[in-house]
Length: 372
Image (cartoon, rainbow, N blue to C red):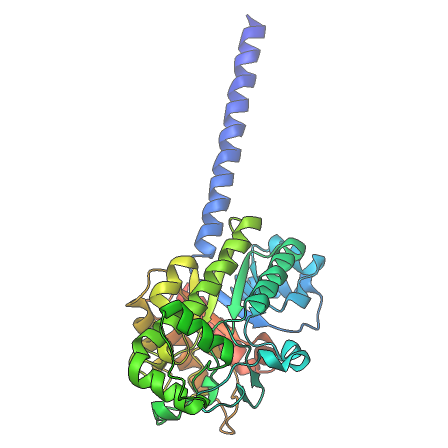
């Protein structure tokens, strides 16, 4: 009788402990889910302190996602991230590739004026080059295998434009448009079963003929090059890691900006891109493009009217390209606008700049604390 009682007590204790562990496990998973309901991210390209201490600091601040250059994701970096339940995305530039272009100038995209796609530091590969696309996808496969990130953040996956210096008063016809190199023109004709008149031999006149006769078809075809590349990257990435998350860096132009240049210049058709990715991150650097902080939310709202995926705007910390300083007050207003619904969070460009601005760091800490 004592043995039976003892066994019952042991069984009861086993069940009780099991419930404790299950409950604790559910609570831990619940906390993790709550932590990541709103993404608070930083872009980081170089770090000076040990990853363990840095991730501890990020965790205390409320940062739950890091967008990093692949060179940073060593073993210690990844272990520190996972110890603090902070997700890591590797930033991968796609058609911005100066190193490859300098070795093989034939790959340059060509503007409507017949010039190579270069403006200051911005240099773009022609997006229709099959061999280049395949090599880039293979590079991404290798990065996923070797670095095992939680996500990919696809940058420069678009057509050429130095949008960072396109201000609100810019006329659409004065924005460079690509790509009119021989391979793009040949592929466009083949895909649409049409012929450019033999009498047209110069790029500017060919570009004008396409604009006047096939602008809608040209725009759709341009967007297809970008959406197709995104789809191919996503398929390749998820063959290796089915759960990997995909973000696309979005040029922060609304549908009505510059005559729908987001499609007919940039080639980013978000309604077609969104079904393939987990999130879009418009680079809403208001100060850089001479917009008010409230503009940040208007870009998010415009995107939300087209897509169902998460939208996490990226905001700048310091001034760039302009000499006028980005004030603490303006930074705070941009941050508040970035977190306003339908946004799913915010990403700061960049951590290195935040570290150099204690006042803006305190604004970040205050706003995030009161936004939880």
